[in-house]
Image (cartoon, rainbow, N blue to C red):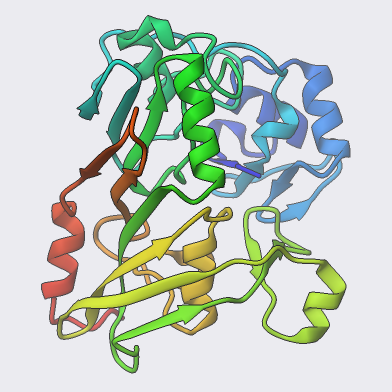
Length: 312
């Protein structure tokens, strides 16, 4: 489940949770927000509070936007929004999403997402895909993950790509930066993953058999190989088939090598301001729609690997 985080500003110091949340989140009705608070989809500093409780300046309101949004509203076209297209054919687009940009809107009227740019530049995408909020998009990336996303331009292409994804013929590879000391040159991580029992922002790697029995996790496999080692950080190539939500991030945290900048999973804050994960390659083995596309490593991640300064 995706979330949005909002810092309580000075002008909302002492406001009720429901009023503060309504002020910070656009295009949400009072009734929607009330239902979301009662369902536990709105939290302050990670904890549930009743709608009448007060918030303070500097506290963080976390909202599970999918529980708040009214369903079905299409992505608003933004024809002037920047869009990096790495590959284009009659049936397929492969676009390069920057870190910090959401893949798709979760609230009615939300702008600034990749989906807004897509439907703005390619109006034919409207009506293609899983929902009007995700025009043609085959898979998502976390907001702070950069890199390649596959987009279908027609309903027929979407069905073919979706089948390829399920059959592991549509493949993805990533690059990440983590602490390199004691990280083997290569390996496979296969801890199953479940929703986190206490924090909806995270997922949970079930390492102990007790947790497997308790949480009924889904199987997950991450294969990696170290590409380059720096003084502190290492650049790691990662292969996955159908990655679960936060799979790579939680798997590396589970082996005590959380991604640089991934503070949600215990990683150290770094200068780039977000977790160091990049979707670097995607390819589709198909006679009709086949492609292979790469994206260069963002400069900030490359700079991290060369840094000799040990984070505080």
